[in-house]
Length: 499
Ligand SMILES: [Cu+2]
Image 1 (spheres, helix red, strand yellow):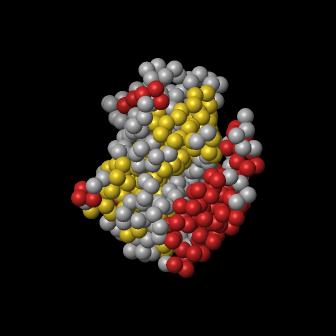
Image 2 (image 1 turned 120 degrees about the horizontal axis):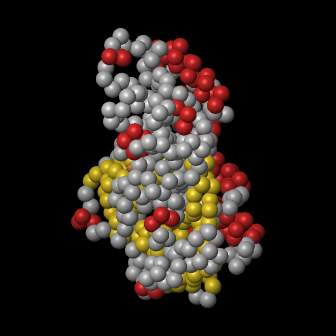
Image 3 (image 1 turned 180 degrees about the horizontal axis):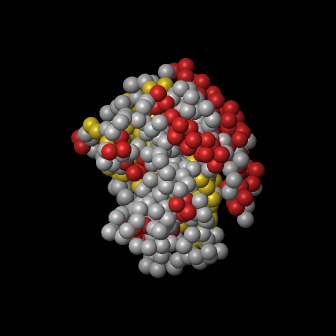
């Protein structure tokens, strides 16, 4: 096992891709091999490009006794999934989802799994054609890995495609434990892609004022791409004209229809690997079912900042929950009443469905800064109400952008005379709008040049595919390269690895 310093160097080199070659020469073959992929891609030779996993680190390896050796540590992880919202998960090596593993078809692979959780776990290699005793099914193919224990998995891989790893304990899966496992083909798929990305879809149920997802819930109010909810998701940076592959993996209770704006794509792969070209059909939305992986490809020939998102309406929101008064601001409130009431459904009981009598729930409608039941501010309401709510929100959310209201379109709008007589009004409450903007809080090179206020309209499983003109593309890539020294500090990874 390398020491901490060389480990961190390797990590940094991996994130840097081709730019890392200078640093990598000082470390191990790990970084050289991976950055080699990118170099080959530019030269047009046979190797595939490295898969980028925005917001998730790459797991380094070293060659030990003829195998690529990886080290995964199952452990509790805290992660800020969007500004102001830090949750408790279980993950791997300080990350949720776990770090990305990339190998090549034909490789001998060894993965050391240490269990730093307070209960037994195991590791299942989803879709791998490997010996049964390496399959990671606790109690049936192996003894569970006890707390403090270790299991060493080792196998030779003859498949290629998009795979993932996860414990075979269902509740642990729902608590964050999954990671991307890419098996590259020895020769790149044709036609070659210039960019390759992978995104893991996860969902969590978290009551207001709590940090611990309820893994038994069937309704979810935090939806993530690679462990981040919009607007904290990191956009995919693409040069105009590039051929692009996106790979999605889903481990949750819902299926996610993933939709890309501005382009038509072709589904080229599944969780079982590359699909025959004869079966590729044009689409712009593809359902990524539970336990599935979907690869799709397109030519990024339409410049702009294009939405890439799950199209389930509730999956494009953050922190939905019922307007239940005290629950939204008082920690430790006991769970109450029936499921119907908790979900905000009327059952004939007297009183307001959103009143304090009803218990906590993950029903509908609470946004950042909600307090008591109140008039919403986000639709075409009157100006005074909007400003009142805005100032209370700014006092509750440090760093929330001031002045966002200025000049925004809806200030000029007047509430239609009959608005409050229209059943169902308002529908666009809390969910999105200029009041939610937090551009500064999520500032990063990949967001450079987006339309001011953009972040007020991005939540849940939403990100951008940014198809950029060459000059803008180069500029952002240069900014990303400059930012790397900071990325070397990866909390959680260094601190658990040496032990
Ligand atoms: Cu979805």
